[in-house]
Image (cartoon, rainbow, N blue to C red; front, side, top):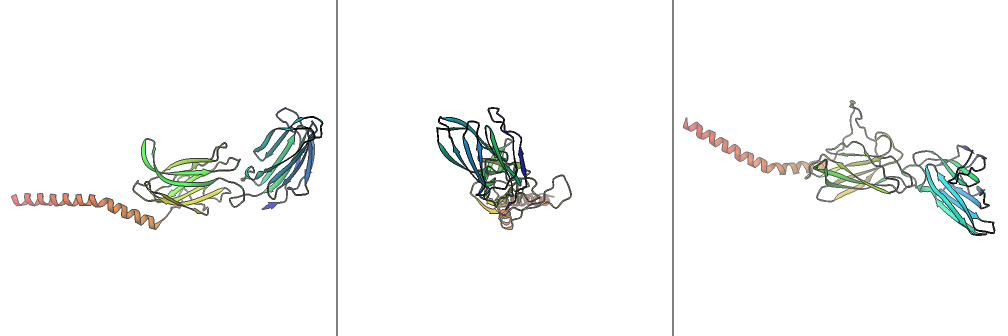
Amino acid sequence: MFKKVFLGITILSLITQFGVVASVTDYGTVDNGSPADKRTLESEKGVVYTVHFDSNNLMLNISAYNPNEEYVSSWLDIELDRTTVRNGEFNMSAHETRNISYNLSGSITANRNQHALQIGTVGDYTAYGFELILNTSSDVPLPEIENVEVTSATIDGEETTALRITVRNEAKVQYLTDIRVTTLETHSGPHSGRVPIEENRRTILVPLNEEPEMIVAGEVRLFTGWVHNDSRIADQVEFEGTVDGGTEVWDREFEPIQIDYANRDVDEYQYRNATVKAKNDEIWRERLKPVAAVAGVMLVGILLVVSLLSRRR
């Protein structure tokens, strides 16, 4: 999974919240982090940071030492890809040593291969460039379908069968995911599965074409990009349930499907479930029995009236 580093990084400047420009340093080509790779940063106030990044487990360890005879307020900034891991003051007593560790698995961006870890203080800076390919099988938190529930809801003023879908994202990275639902009667359009960055869950309602009395069976797909392609971030479940009863949900391996995006002549994917279809057909037959009985009575009545009229003639 982990590959040789692709990048040499030249740092021009580091601008902190205080507006101080760090020294210019050329670190050349760096490796992707190893037990032997330790770097030292020194802040303008003399605080010494010893940095060790191990890309094998995405762990960042920093040891800070204040050699001064007085209390010092330093600054430490850590950024990985587009996520700020830390950006704030680092207060230390005289001759104090402090060790801190960061698990970066929740901060790395999964939908890119090349990553940059940047660590800076006022006056100094270092960076790691490395290549790492992530997907749903990696030990990194990614968006996933947490729960699916068949329910009823009022949408646009009308009571309708709907699917309540909860998406979970425990990462510190926001992803623009989409959701598609396919059932025996429904082909939903794409619905946003984006979880707000300040939250770790989001629940959406998707209206369905099934009648409230019917058993609803189908699939839910969560993905980035296009549903007809393999997606780096992808999750899929299959479900079966009713409005008034429970919903059974089980995981499926993500399967790209063909969708008619622009009224093209394509063989659009259709979800099939012969068992549920047979059950729903039986439900329809039971619903039609009273109607058929009334129609039969009316037909007999009509025939009697016709017979009486014929005799009078």
